[in-house]
Image 1: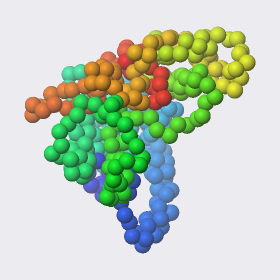
Image 2 (image 1 turned 180 degrees about the vertical axis):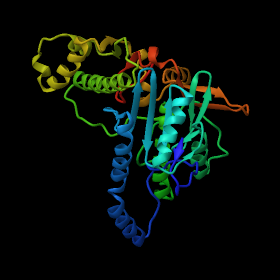
Image 3 (image 1 turned 45 degrees about the vertical axis):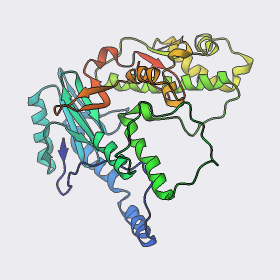
Image 4 (image 1 turned 45 degrees about the horizontal axis):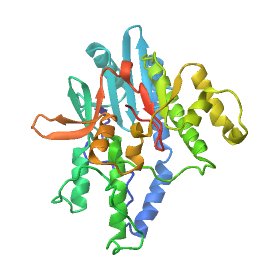
Length: 352
C-alpha cells in the first residue's frame, strides 16, 4: 500500500457512517466553508492521477472508475485508488516494483509494504487468501457503549423478544444513542451477519411483485459482479443461480407470456428474462427453510443462524497470538466458485 507525503497514517475506525457528535455553530460554519473550498479537490486529484497513469498502459475500469487495470500479455496489475491511499497487486514482483517506481517518479510516495490495514480494516494473509477483520473497531464501539464487561451472545437478535416504542425508559443521551446505533453499520463490511433490512424502497401491490423486484435487484448486482470479473480477466463460465421461494416468480422469469397482473413490473420482467435468455442467470425455486436472506430480516435460532452465517464466508480463524477472529475471508479460488449460488431476499446478493 502506498501513501502520499504530508498525510499521516493512523489505524482507526472509519466512522463516516456514524452520526456526528455535538458541534458548536461556529464549527459548522467553518466546516461548510472548508467544504465549499475543497469540494473540487477530489475530482482534481483523480484527474491529475488518471492523466498520468492512463498513458502508461492502464485503463480505468467501467465498473469502478477508481480501479485501474494494466494488462500486457500475461502481465497484469490492478491498482485501486482511494483518496491518498493506493493499493496495488501485480502478477509478479518485478512488475509490481516497476509500477511503484513509475509512480514514484511523478508523485512523492511512501511504500508501506504488503497490505495490512485499509480503511480501518485489518488484512491478514494466509494460505487460503486474505482474511479481513474489524476486531479493533468492534472493541472501540463496545468500549464507547460501556459494554466491555458484558457477556457475548450467540445471535444478534433475540427472536423471542417483543419490542415496543412506548414501554421502558428513554435512553439518557439521544446523541450517544444515535452514534452507537450508526457505528455498527461500518462493521457490516466484514460482518454481514449483523446487518438488517431497513428503509423499504418500494411499496408493492402484491407479494409476487415484491419478490420479483428482489430478483431484479439481485440480477443487477450479479451482472455488475460478472462485468467486473470480466474486466479482471476472470470470466465466469457458469450462470449465476438465483433461488427464490415463490414459484410464480420463478415461472415469470422464464415465461415470455405477458400477464395482466404483471404489466406494472414489466421493465423488471424484461430485464431478468434477458439475462436468463443469454445464459447469465438461472432462477430456480428454493424452499423457505433454505432462504439465506432471512439472516438479515428475521431473528433466527443459533443453529440456523450459524449455518446461514457460514454461507456468507464469515468464519472463525485462529490468529498468530492464539485468539479467534470471526470475520470475512476472501479465498484465492474465487474464479471458479465465486457466487455460484445466489439467494434472493430483501437485502440482495449473498454467497452460499
